[in-house]
Length: 468
Image: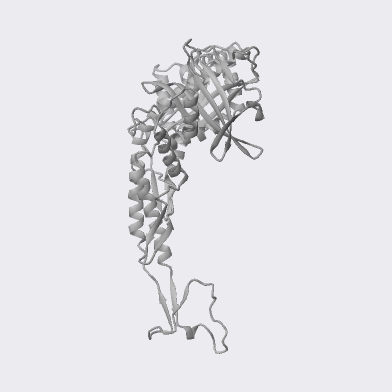
């Protein structure tokens, strides 16, 4: 990360402080479930320091994944009110595995604070100045994590210019592809493309032609547009760690203490079972029979052979420690409740049941904390999806010979089935239809998931068929 900052500086660009990417690195460690200095530690046993590894409950991953599944799942519908526009958008999405990748990078956004989708053209040819001289043959969506996003200029939290670094691999070698979207004095965007060979963290620029699939990427491309070709996504929470940085923060940025509690209790519970394992103390005279043959398996950890000069007592003695499972279960449930509350789920998201962490099955009301927080996060995601669709339409018109309406109405229907009673909502809408509050076309558009124009046309056709 710091190497990219140095490269940008050498190219004349400044970005956010390097310390911010150190913070992203800490969130990444929590997301991966291994934090240096916490999960790997040393304990002094009275003789020497012993290296220990703490078990993890992996709750940072669970939190980020849960929000991604609530917000960007297979039931989310992006509707463009035009057949040609919808078909073109869907074709680009299918060709880029959009739904799968968007869910994955929604998870990264909640884990690391920010993610991005960068739109670029493929197969386009440009002149020496970087202007297009031939149509493009496709649109590529590049998904970028927070540790590859480098804002260059911003205002009121909105990033106007930005660089994006993505890691690539080919033929056993690692590369970094760097895109710089800048807004020069003439008011339109210029995109700089650079490729670097990564040799143990040392980056050396190489020609774009060195990597298959990037040979046709121009070093410089002028979009001749004042609209960016990227969208940035983040949880809808304020950055209280550094308000001057325009990037988002992890959903668990203010819940690290609760993550530590979960892992401390989970590790302690495991130790309780390990240390409380049944042991059988055996004196040396009891380990062989009268013929000198062993009576016990030497590899069996249940048996412990006492020294020859052990005190008098039973030849075989069973030791079984009591387990404090109830105390651990209570403590783990409290830690999970606190974590859920700090991450916007309310206080009853997870249940610690028989040593397993499961999603609680209680019915959630529409006024719940989770529902309100979900709606808040949807505000940003909705803007991201709509703007992404408009970027695709603009590129289709300007560089692929399409005739698309760039200002067509676009809507996003989120899945709220986990917190809404759809049957009750349907009955309520039927009653409103009977009272004349809803029109038939509005009712059909909502429940058949059509745009209003299509719904009106379908109702007209149905009415015509119903005529004698």
